[in-house]
Each structure stands twice: as C-alpha cells, then as structure tokens.
Image: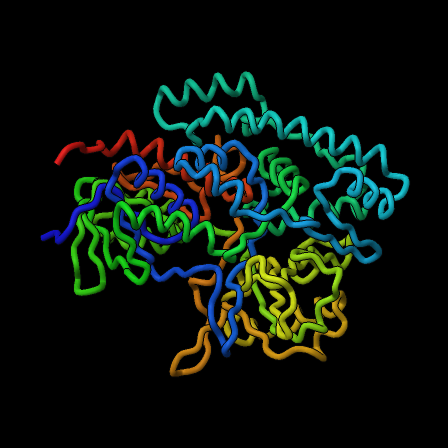
Length: 494
C-alpha cells in the first residue's frame, strides 16, 4: 500500500525538472523530487572540490527565462543572482585571442584586430543571425508545445509554419557563415563556443540551435555568487517549501497499470508512493528501465532504446598553484588547436577556472582549472585506461595555452572515474551526452518529445530541448508545465 501520495513526482535533479517542480509548487501542487543518484555540479576528491561539468550561463535575458522567473515571482533574484562576466569568455586560436565582451565597441575592435579585412563580412553575419534570432524569440514568446500533440496543436503548428518558415523541418537554413571559407579562423571562432555549450550537434545547423546559441553567447556570460549549484538550490528550495525533496532517494520501480503510472517503489525500505504524474528528469534510458518489462509500452521503449548520443563530454580537473593561471585569463576560454580540422576531441577545449568558488576573489594560492572536450561515445567503453589517456591528451593540449601547467600541477582527476574496493571504474552516471538529429517539429532543438507513450509520464531532463543552450531547461520546464496542467487537476480545500 502507498505510504504517501503526490500529485507530481520528479525523478532526477536535472535543471529542467527542478524549474518545472518549482512552477508546480508555486501553483499549489504537491511535489516530490527523488534524486535518483544524481548530484550537483561539484564533487570532492583528494581533499579538493572539483567540477563535475562546465556550464557557461548565457541568454538570461530571453523570454523563456524571464517568463519562468515572473511566474515564480523571482524577478528580483533574476536581477541580483547572476553576475555579468567581463569578458564573457575568450576564444584562443592558433594565431588569435579574442575577448568577447558585452561592450559593442570593444568587441568590434577585437574582431578587427584578429580578423583584418573581414569587417564587412562579419557585420553581415552578425546582422543576419540577429534577424533570424528575432524570429526564434517571437516563436518562443508564443510558447507552442513542441512537438505538437493532438489535432488542435497540430493545426496551430501548421499556422505557425506559414508565419515562420524555419519551423518546417524541410526548410534548409542558409549558412550565415557562407562568405567565410572552411578553415577561416572566424568560422572556428563562432563554432568553438557554440559546440561546447549546445547539447545538439546535428549534421546541418537548425536556426534555433546555431543562431539562438551564438546570439545569446555574444550578449554575454554570467556566473553566480554562490557557485554553479545556485539555480538548482533556488528551485529545490521552492519545491521543498511545498512538497518533499529526497536527494539521496532512489526509485527502484515505476508500477504501471493500463498505460498509467500508479506508484513508485523507493529502494529505501521498499516505500511505495502514489502518484498522479511522473516526470523523467534524468537519463531517459535509465528512467525507462524502471518500468517492469511486462508493463512496458513496447513501441515507446523502442524509441527510447534507439536514442543515441553522438558524443560524450569528457571533463578533467587540474588543481594547480595560482602561478599557473595567467592574470588575463577569463573565467571561460575556448581553445582551438587547428582551425582547418573538425572541432572535436582535443582540437577544441572548454577551459574554466575557479568553478568551485562562485564570484570569490582570485587570491587563493591553490586554484582549480577545469576542462571539457567532446569525445566519441565509444571512448566510454575503453575503460579506466582510456579515461587516463584522455586526461593525458587534455593536459598536453592545455599546456599549449598554459605552458607552465605541469610545473604547478598538484592533482588531476576526471569524474568519469569512480573508486571502489576493487579499484577504479567508469561511472556511467557521469557520461554527459550530446545528441545529433532532433525529432521533427521541435525547431531542431530536442532529441526527445515531452509526451510519452504513457498517459501520465512526461519526459524532461537535460536532453529535452538541449539544442537551445541555456534556454533549453526553461523551454522544457514550460512545456512540461503546460502538459501537466492538462493531466493533473489542482485540488482545493482540505
């Protein structure tokens, strides 16, 4: 028998589901969050705080972000919590270093210095991406459910396609970088940050994946005074005030009857929790495996089973003496080794310093340098030896930019490796996927749909709308919220 009942149960702690949970709690729903083994952006190893992932918050001025904070009555927090980075980030090419600043005249000066003779072509590119981004912003303000489900939503979507042709999956966007030949350093400059922060890397760029992310990045990056977990903790606090948060809890099974989730079986003491709506807020495949095989919707589970990333993001942490960090180094740096080669593996690194201390001053004797790169998914099957080899490759590439790293290195580690009684092994929970092609009618931004093959199970998490960069979790949360209100009645009274 159920020992408790919740209207909304969220499995996992990805940002999208926590935003959704806060919206539901604010509305009056009783919400449960089960951690499901996931953790925050930081972890402890060897007596040091290290980064599990590297995030560059951007696009906080967008309509989905503003909408969420307005719905939650957090307008003041949106103004005060994020701190503008200046410069927002740096891009280091073999023969150039560009500071991307929010000050337009300074940015123009940087671009003229590093890409001489390309002023007109760069201006044309910036103007075109701004035009397309304005249309994407207009669509997001309308808040369509993507992909559309049902006759009415399908009709509304077709009307939108007439106004905004790029919504049609068959519409091939022209390349805004067409005037720059392959191998041109400006191409590498634009694609470097985009490929690092976007969770969708399709064969051809969609306007809402490429243009949206590039435009938001050029408007500046942010960080938070209380560190990289600040937003997650903010939304978790709102949920806890109106429901329950079990960060160490693990769902062992989702009981489904006639296509509807009825209860969750928690691993701790085999507690059974009744639910009206269940939201996946973690890896879709691990979530789907929680439903017993005899209760599964075979057609839907086949879709989830065939969902495959094209890359994993490999993160390495390097604890160094302060002298290893150049004074002019920005909080985030994108390093390209060879502009004529694909921007993958160690040819493109995302470096970030001091992710463990929020906005604290840089006067510590020991500092944290974190790096990330996209690697083929087969790298994870290589085991511990491959993980150490990737760390070696990463360190060599970092030393191309920071030549004194090795002299001041105190510790290095990757969250891919976990230690147990038998030694080290790859931790599957630490594999951060980047996906290829999107499903139809999602602006090319999402490899999964919010609606599932079950009556009261919805999909959220990091994969949902991951092509929108930092906008993605907010769009996913709003999409979830629209569907939830149509599925769960809000009870009033006592």
